[in-house]
Length: 232
Image (cartoon, rainbow, N blue to C red):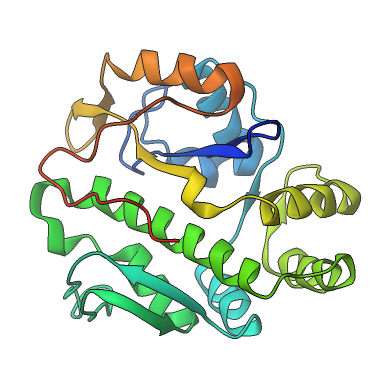
């Protein structure tokens, strides 16, 4: 989930591990299959005490196609990824170009991170999103080029009652913001029932801060994980 303050051009990405318990008790990712986008949006709104205004989703093949359609992306990886047998990730640290399949493998890597795998995977997905934004911004897209990018987006995602005009406006806003000004935050979680992750009590302050203007003052790294500043 991404919040933006248009006045300050600051933003926050709140990453929610897929194993997190939703208000109705199941893992959060279960509600996407049960109720589609409206189902998962309802759970997130209730969990965080916010109102999500726009929601989109995609799947693996369409994600790969979108990345390849824009010519791949540049991503600055802060650490080794060697989850090859599982996600296909096999990368060394540093700035490098990746195609759609490689970007997906980075976003899916969790076996490199032991007990924090689900949380760190979510953080890595945030790195991919911010890298895609940085790559698009490097081309300084005009309004007409934004429309071409919007065509790729519309073909690659499912939306929840979002018009083309709204997507264009949101796209122009996103392209006006430096990814370095968007915090990549994974919400605090603790042990839950079975393999579920409970929302930690300290998450309440983070949610309240986010609800105010879409940004947070600070967020903690994944405990025991490898969170580093998001690459631009």
